Length: 213
Image (cartoon, rainbow, N blue to C red; front, side, top):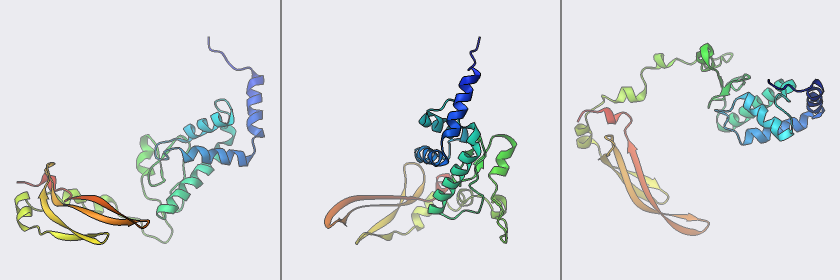
């Protein structure tokens, strides 16, 4: 038969959790989030990792769910603000959900579409849907021309890498895509030391793999 913890053990666990001050919980949460992939980790997993670091049993931080959720939301917003500004509330995390790369919470089931929808911002018009914007770039370009036409009409061009100009020439890659390719040695100064780099640049045209010969 399954063993159950005595009520005294459960009570001691709750007591231990209640004795941990908010600053300790915050420090532990930040430590866990620092080594977690926020696009995959759920709130439940964050609390479990925190409980292990704090020496608590499973569910030891259940009474602090709201605090942990708030800390995670603030940390995601902070990371997002370092990259690109996001609409207020876009980084709110729901318990049991996984924040996606934009900082929104995605859930399984019927909430998936709603969770991926852009947050409404007062005074701003909602962003157009993908359907209103038109087909994706790959779809628009996959019938732009043929591979033969590209190779006949594409012109080479130059790019500046450090102090050197290198030439990118039209090329049909082994993958089937068409684009431009550049290959050259470039010298750059690193801390007063000239270093030579092998520079190879592939510039495939998006959708060109679908072009007819």
